[in-house]
Length: 395
Image (cartoon, rainbow, N blue to C red; front, side, top):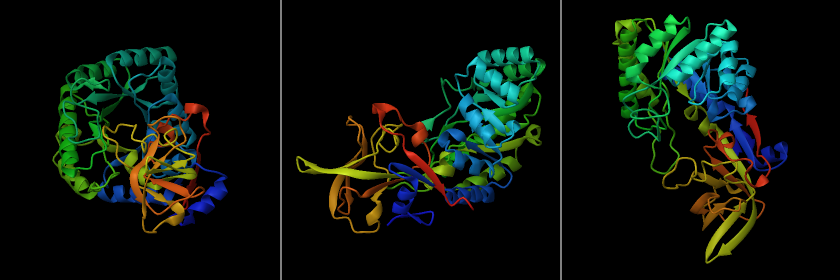
């Protein structure tokens, strides 16, 4: 039987009451935080809430990081509910409504501005509320993280202000009485190449210095973005974060004088939480079609869109999966594992080798701690929402 956080998978299902079920091992998250702290001792750690918003997990991680980064008013409310001081929350996203801007300004949350138009709306809301808004500028850099899964910088992007226009905007914010909080520079995500991250971070620090010199004022904080990936697929290797940390320390040791008193932070979501999660779903049918065996489960892409291959994959590849109640048994048949939805897109494993599995057995989909339930079309076809639980919270 698969053990998750020291507990049997079948016992966790009984405790939760049903499948499908997400289980998050909080000890795994704590270990990732410790690894980051050791590799980046002088860098602040922020959690990107969009990776996983499950309340017990969010409460746990909020106590271990230096800030929370949100992308909606709803996430902002969750971050505040997790007892995080508003001054330690930043709010990014290219389509903030006026009511979201107003809520953030009233609360004292830092807004990462995505355009000059958004800046003007935030300044006007601040004037009307007689509150100096806390404003940072999200920069669209002229570079990206090479080999990143999602490229957030370089060229025309809906995210951030093009680097060439940033100094004028920052000077305007300061002259208008805003509390300028610095730069947010995010070049990409899901990178496994240490050298690519090192190069991007070096370029980010140099860009921050150039922008600060053009503004004439040091930024209080430079958010270096994140981009740390995890290996999902066969042949991928884990990111060497220690190497990245050592290189960043060298870069910061030689940074321009204008950044000497600036703080630096790295914003991570997937890298912190993905490996903590397992999605458990039960086999409800076993069928053969044209010689192929299909294991049909009560879960699927409405809970785990990423594992189905429909969340950014160009060519679908299988997440690691196992038969939880035959964990460690030798594989003896080739099967495809599918979900319960009426669409051929609902696939959890194509043509994989497993021990023989029967109706009632549990399928475990690993690396389910990030962009699982919160990133999936839960209402599609009206199936029940998956259950969630956390284990190992004492760490």
